[in-house]
Length: 297
Length: 155
Image (cartoon, rainbow over all chains, first blue to last red):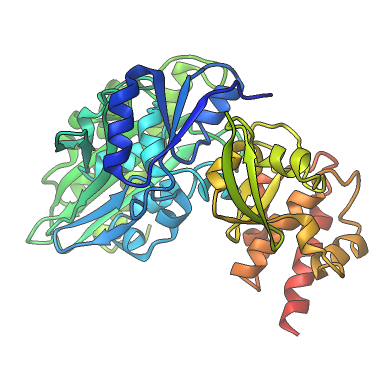
């Protein structure tokens, strides 16, 4: 399949990129790794007149470990994130999820910024970032602003980014809790190289006494027009001891299912997706609780 | 409008002018005549177009040639320059080549794996080549061939 002709632009700084975006508005599409965009262009789903390459921007693929947060440049590739010691220790769930995206060859090219901006409801990097209360930094030629990632997605394939804006950075706040744990589970039709039918990220922490669960966060992909949190399910488990929380897991899982609004498509039925949310919330919750309270799972 | 591109392929530097809608795969096959790299699905699924870009395996059908500006590409032709790579010999000896279409991509991914992890176990090999499809389904022999190279690299 051929790619229709377009005009090519490349930027070496963010400032330069923003100037070009401002000039061309809706005529131009941004390309980073390009693994989603080039596919869509080959399939004639997107036919941009102009393309702006971001890959020549220096120093936007970093992972920085700071005292109160981890900062990830939008051009960081999935293979780099998945294998990075700071992410593996501090945001395990994100390392797990980015390590499951596509194939090795795709993870070597595709970027986290691209995964988020492509805004697939099933994007694997989204549930972990939602569960970790990540923020995103959006830049335009005038200023930069920080927003919670929960406000970023507006529908399948759409975000609140304006044509003249760029997603520049992802910020994961570090928790002060001494103990925290999280996990990601992804349902696929085959064991490798597939997109998520359902993705569930579960995060939990221990309170100061070390006896009760707090800051529970459950985020899900592939089960609504955008990746979503299951706030009511989280509330069911908050402030509970290990024994009580374990007993409450099935109720929380049902509450998580109630928060979904999946569709039936070529890959799975809505009913099946709901059943899997129930199972995966129970599995991830059990795993995380057992880690937090040092129980043998 | 054509745009200048500087790229190193198999150790040789090229200064070219190309159209922006050229993929890295088409550049290799059509402009440079390096047809060892295969075009299978063209959609990033099958892995037969795998080459190493700055040492990392990538699918050259899903990368614009211009996005590889300033980078180094290694293809199957570069791997076997002069004498065959141990992986190429192993694929022949172990019967890991059937129709041969997936072989160049498979070998490039395997090469990157062994560069990173000289002693991979079966699972690590299977995970590495998950993005390389063999329609003859000769995976056992392929894994065997890669494994035999892991051992011989050690010696």
